[in-house]
Image (tube, rainbow, N blue to C red; front, side, top):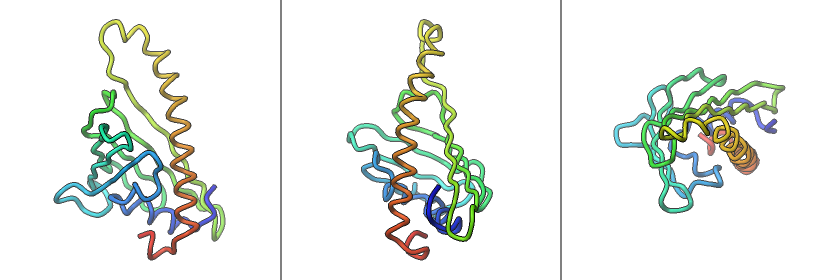
Length: 151
């Protein structure tokens, strides 16, 4: 739960190039050239804090104030494919239930396919911690900014 109205929570996510403002693992984020600032098809580049890892993402499903699907379209993470499903549910005038789920397929060779279930379980546990940090970062960011500033 985030103690902010769904409109404000949505605005913070819909300002697509600004995710580094509330994501602890990111050093920087920016819109890709020619991208819209938000909405279906918006694209961004994110640099991780390690200074080496990056991803490029695109909004592939967009239902204002309800759901956003963010798909990795490029990067150097060990992922064959990945997407984040972010859901927004109003729980009162000033409370939002923000859901966050990841679907991913790690890059694996032939031998790796045998280890896939174990690798997915380990990655899911790591992702859970990352998701918790993103959600906490979003709540903290929103507690310090107005709706206009978050947009």
